[in-house]
Every structure is written in C-alpha cells, then in structure tokens.
Image 1 (tube, rainbow, N blue to C red):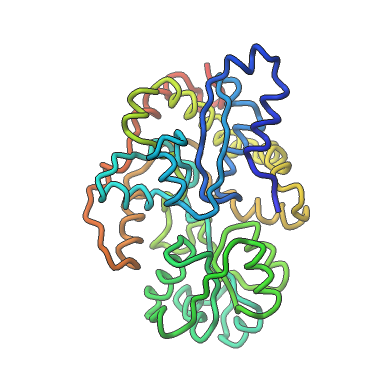
Image 2 (cartoon, rainbow, N blue to C red):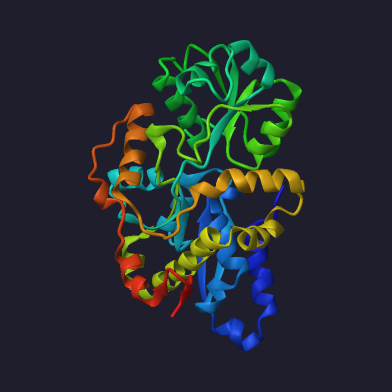
Length: 346
C-alpha cells in the first residue's frame, strides 16, 4: 500500500556524495507498523531535515507490533522505538529503563469503522451521541490486528465505556494487517475493524461508517492521547545526547512544516503512499492532520491517558508515576536553537 521508510533511507544515502554519506551518524528507528502514525518522521526524512543534522536514519518495521519493536531497542538492535507509549509504560513496570523523549502524534491515530448496513440497522449517524455510536458494535464481528494490540484495546475501551461487554456483546476477530483487514471487510467476513488511515479511509470510501473522529479529539476520554512518540533507553539518551538533540530538532522542523504549510508537507509524504489512490490519500491526510503536534514537547496528560487506557482494558493494572515514562530534557535543550516561527534551526 505504501513504500517502507527504510527504502527512502537507502535512497537518501545513495544520493549523497560518498564522503558526506560516510560522515553521517547512523540512527536506527524501530517501527511496529507503517502508515499515517509516522507522518512527521516521513516529512523529516523527505525534506532532508535528518540529513541536515548529519543523520542517516534507517527504519526497521516489526510487523509483530510494538513489543517486538521495543525489544529491538532494549536489545540494542535499534536506537529508538517510535510507537505507542503504553508499550514503554509496560516495560517500565518490568524494570526496563526506557523513556519517551519526543511527541510524534498527540491524538489517537486509530479508530473504528463499520459497514453502512450495520450503521443503518443500529440507527447511528454522525449526529448520534458517541455512546450510541459505540453501542452500534453490539452483535457485530469486528476485526483487530491481533490480541492485545492497540486496535484490540481500542475496541474494548470504546465498548466498555458504552456499557458493552467486549467478550459477550460482539465478536472480536484477529485478522492481521491492512490487506487482510480490507479483504475481510469487503467480503463481509467482518462487519467492521479498528485500524488507522489510510486503511480506515479506504473502508469509508467503500461505504463504511467511521464511528468517531479520534484524530480531532471528538471522543473526550482519549482527547490529547499521546499516541506515537520517540522512545529510547535512558542510557542511550545519556550517552547519545547530541544525536538525540539532532533527531528532535529535525522532528521539530517537520512538525512545524505540517502545521504551517500542510500542502508542502503532504506532498513530501505522498511518495511513501505511491500505490494509494490519490483521493483516498488526500482524505486520509485531511483526517489525520489534526493529530500531529506543532512541537515535540510531551504533555503529562497524554501519558496519563495511556495509563488509564491500559488499566481500563488490561487485567494487570499499572501503578506508575507517569513522569517516569517521559522526559522533555531533549526538547528543552533543543528549544533555544529552534525558531518556532520559522521552523528552522537558527
């Protein structure tokens, strides 16, 4: 559906003079998936902001999810994990010293879509209450990527908040990634699913009904949820402070571009979704745009919502000070060298 980011990394390095490419500092990022959750990273890469900082950023995608991606960071096979902070929260409860150090997406990046017939049968529309829309899940077959995944947790969270029992009132079916999900949805094997754009957008274009717009903060319990962040080991942050600052400065420039010139940012992202229909890409971009922050500063409330989200759907409750899970020290160090008006390093 879209080109993996690591391909762009290789192309970027190949376009640089040999001496310049040799001088770049290699940074490996571990992603649990691909998609609109990582748009600021794509922008920083395509606009050359990482290269401007002397970084050669490579991405490894771990299709088995966030735990596998973070394991690569803990095992020193990657420098930073880019994904859901809840994964880092769980790691800290097990004694792993990891911290989020830059915000990438500050609204919930996934949502739930159901087929039009099911929405009509439940009598819900965009003007229905959020509780009524969530209750439309009753009796349906809803696809998630896998048990315990963010998509699975979201469906359970919405159901419980609406007074439904996710293990009795409807059926949750592990389907896998985007291609499998769309195939099952179009064939009627499932009535809906939980995922992020552009997969959700594709289903909507096929007549699906998106239950709620989480990217715009429509659902207040998850409004301001820190959904995607750069996360690294504490010892790596301490020993690679300059590199971490360069990463955050490049990310900051990308986030400012998205906020100040979204059309330019959109065009720099388009190559990563070259096989996605233009109308679907543009719709997915518009739907996701409100979820990206103007700066990489992490807010405590966004981390707290990760913990509350976990405790609402997981059997093993988390008791952890949210301030242990993140640091703004890198953002604070970079701030004097960044003009938020110009979006460029001074």
